[in-house]
Length: 364
Ligand code: SF4
Image 1 (cartoon, rainbow, N blue to C red):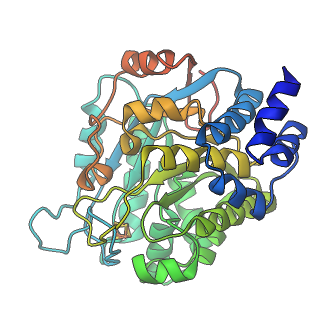
Image 2 (image 1 turned 180 degrees about the horizontal axis):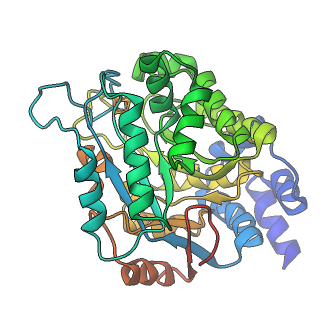
């Protein structure tokens, strides 16, 4: 059987990579490009599934969670963003503390993870966020608070005229448990210059995550792919994240996010195919040998493709979500939220065993 497998991968010119994967050896940049160039995506999926099975067996994780977006007003104006509004523009909003708490009241299940992110608002002071974290922690004491991307942290520091380290320490004292992975987009400066020139640089993003790790916080990483970047840019992004993890060790999960084209100023000549999304997820699993979890984010992928991703290296299905605005403004056609039994049925439907987790991936 092993011999047959070797022959199968050798026939795809993947013999050396297969040997490295079997031996648990790290893949190089060139290996990553070979995986992208291979004409047979199912072979890449099979390699990623080997690693995913070695790490997690047939488990697929999910969490009872809730997403809350506190504002869509943002000064950054990233060209790919369908979510952002100007102050005073039709549809612009800012939630106050009571409105945030009311969102938590509105759900039937007690969340184990609350994910709060928003735009970079020109005026909201750090005290607003400390107040919200304290109130949410009081209302949902068993939930892990995963809030504010590194881009928001950098923005808070600029408004407050202080350091990002100080902002992280203050938010941690107010109840922040971990950072989500948003804002990473593609690290290459030539891509950022075109799609998000006002946003934090890759170096700033990585530094803020490593500062959070030093404070004992966990974080996630993301990659927004399928816009103007090349496959080389994707591999470079994964390698920078892998190096950052080698330095700090605090990344829990990586979330490959396919770019959704609706309501965006970016015109994409060749939108991602389903197989290219799955291939990128599989390569993420293979390159990121030091990040434990890869998420199939059903909101952006759609439920059916997220199911397929569980066989292409992903092991996490995210969660109930409840209300999602950012992906849906960009054209996500998935539901707003899912129930526990729907999540479990989706996971079982692709031959995996559903395992409920908390925000830190502890099984519950
Ligand atoms: S992606 Fe984030 S930072 Fe960029 S414009 Fe949208 S909300 Fe603002």
